[in-house]
Length: 111
Length: 116
Image (cartoon, rainbow over all chains, first blue to last red; front, side, top):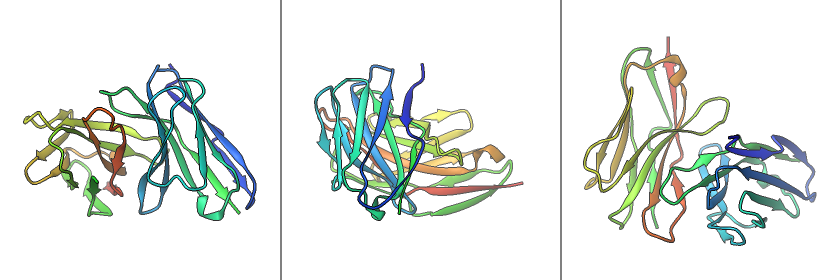
């Protein structure tokens, strides 16, 4: 099993550009999450999904959109990137009673 | 809303010694899960240990153990016989056991340095 994979691993954007981060899991997990990690702030939840076709806002959803068209994939979109979105982004997935499993992270820099 | 607090931004320990990382949380719920995750320089988040709130017995995983004090809402991680490979950021996390509440709430992390 590959677990949770994220594409790309690194990306540099200019302000105003758009991009999509792809997360895939092969563990048949129901729940998937997108977090951002910033120094001194831990991990903050952006959006999450409790099943195929569902999404919900987390703690810091502004400027991001998500989609879960297939159970194994969870996409995070930035419509118009801003320097404040420079961060490391983690995707994660879990079953209801199991511990969350994280992907390797994507380092995004917005100039 | 639930919160998780890690009041030690950085800790140091001598190799082979024991260190304890602190975590406190706030919740009005009675049933929940608590976790410690390790993040080495590779950035990968790795589950260290997990505790169900309804269990009175403290969880243990080899050199890692917790001191879970439910009434005090405290969940500390003890690392025994520290090794150089234990150097990492450690995050405490909370998750409700209630159906429909699937969010994990993380603390701000403690950076552990292991001195040779």
